[in-house]
Length: 400
Image (cartoon, rainbow, N blue to C red; front, side, top):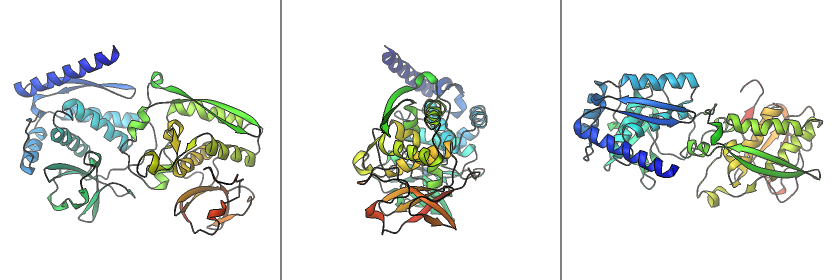
């Protein structure tokens, strides 16, 4: 019944919007964004035509119309919410996507939907740009971070990442000419992919996942609260640098269902045993699978994604282990990247096993991913002992 109501509601919204375009009238839209509901009034002055012929001239004409229209009330509401909820740029972009979808549904007219995303992001101060190539509308934003696995272009010594590359999975967007990009004079800010705070989801939208693992002949059980909206947030998230990746936090309900239980389980354990417990929890509480087999490509799961994913690999375990150690012990750590593997090392008061020396400090390897050997703290897998690695992230408490 609920599904039928949603379908009927969506149909009515599309019907209302279609009629509004034809009559040149405004309309009201409403949508949910995690724990909040947005009610927006779309004035007729910002409604653009349902054109099917894509061109630079059309985009500029649309911009001129909306720029002279009553868009400010929508923009002010979005920016006020961003500030109030401390949304990082990536989450703010999810809000803009929802807003553009409400104004002009993606399936009804993809180019118009993309136009509204670009307009709202640019008016929010970000250097967002559009270009037309091979009858496609390509959406870029200026970003100065170390981002990989998505197309980008360089224009006037600035790097622009493609925000809608997932809609053109088989197109070579790296060949799009940058010199013909459409921009806004006031839009100059850089966009960041760092996610340092998760949104507040509705508690009733969580479900419980049972997780267990054995440690020292005892079985530990966990009922972890998880939310599928997390998967949606990171569905098109690119491969970011390791510092940004490792510092993606858990959402409030997931944190509350896991961290206090782990903290209780660690009571009475000394530091070494506690880290060993977390290492083996990360290693054995989840099934292992390579990304190529699991996703068909490289994909780094956030700690929360690893908790609800059926399978995870070494990147995912390293990020989860880092997060748990940081939250429960807050010790210095380094991430050691090999050609085909990544592992972690922790700084103890005294090194354990064969130490890893980095910038004058000693760290002990803590392998959070299953290996052929049952590795203890300070032990490196035999197939990696003579393989060169590089430190891709070094964490120091107080530098969060």
